[in-house]
Image (cartoon, rainbow, N blue to C red; front, side):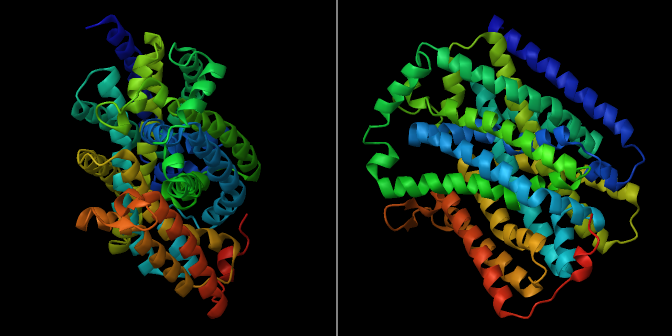
Length: 503
């Protein structure tokens, strides 16, 4: 084995031991405790832990590898706008508008999942069941996209088979989550968030110092020339290119407002003061990690004149390999990406599995004990990880896989969830109308992929199956509009008790 790979594997081994220890410690801490401790950690999380957990769940290998590579290749430095949008809209604005209200309402009603929120607010067990099924099914492709992102960089830097890399990733996520539950992921996220923050800073420095880039000033000058190329989307077709870029910014920013595993982070925050502090910490984290990740990806065309073997998902892995980054730093980078991906996988898995156990199984068998429900949730976590692994081997591009998932989940849930935080007037009919309209619109690209991959959009916007972000944005806007209009023209069904004395 080459010295480079020995060093990289050594760094990864240290990380894996750390993760196993975290899982073991919190398996003892949650032993014989109920589902509340396993899923929301006793609702006693502080600002730093909550904020870094939010950030590490938001930004995984999907962002670093799939999105950063594709946007950098397609839009050059303009791709950095996606990262800044994620920081300002997907993080700061989301925390300001959603976090404290969600914390107070879910604490009052002992809500542990988004389907439970819908049932409590709209008095609809059917909505609870529908949302549970949608969440479990459509979090799977998102989870699979995380596997694909991380396995692509492992195959390039470690020269290991992608299939074997995916198995290792699944095992890491399973150890932490199945053993320790929510608090294990929170504590692991805290340390991994620090690794990500400082790792991205160092990564930016090394990429800028590489001979290909030649420093910040030279790199920006070179990219300015490259971005004049007629093949770049914003030059070849300005309208289609602008629409594509804006759709990416909006979907990856506002999409988090309706994702169950992201909203779940607000449930466990200790108090309002911690919410304010968490908003500041998570925003700074997002600016550095997301902004930095897209900034690194924006230099892809300086390293390659044509796409590397494997396509856009292999731009960033090969960029890092060719940037003459020190071996020890490559190990840190891999740990950074593993950390980001494992925490995202854990958040997705816990959200999907707990939804099925608490919102479906508990409804069918109300007498099931708390300890048995916790065991069922652990088993479902394991099954979800295995299912994600299987889907990841379908070889769908990372960005497409994630866009399908985010589009359907955010398109379905953002409007009835976010509006309910502020409006006592929105009723069950309005919520159903918004939920179903968003679901149908966001499902169009998935339908096209399954039925006819040649379906295209007008105005040279390309194939429908490639426009997941655009349909996601349309789904969110239409769902919001439908909810608001239906609420305005239909009879209000105020649920005063739901909002009373929520502290």
